[in-house]
Image 1 (cartoon, helix red, strand yellow):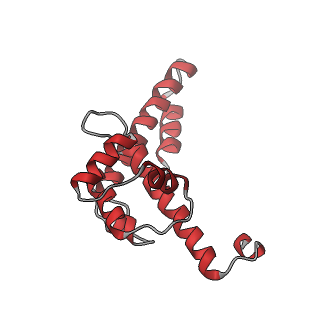
Image 2 (cartoon, one colour; image 1 turned 90 degrees about the vertical axis):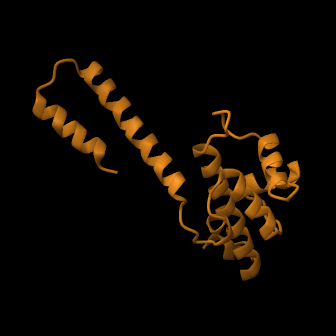
Length: 144
């Protein structure tokens, strides 16, 4: 493990891992869930949403969270962020918090859209291809 090579204490290594995991989760929410305006969330939308949930989220804290920098993050901050994205707070609070259904559904939709794009690109690029070859290509695309 590279953390040990850096001479970090187990606590410090765990804190860094937690920060990185949290950043990955938050960035996934940002990538997948759109704001009411149909655009990706920006800091102002996150701040205002967190404020409605009773927590003031500073721009500094938000950028540290997104970049995976180690910091002490109060549970209320994570609950407020979860409220903004309308997901179960456990996803952010627990290290092994399961992916929210909403995120899974969006990811599935993105995957099938991507497959459809690849399929239509392949059909255009390859021109007339026999149906068996197309079936074989579709099968490969559908395997995750």
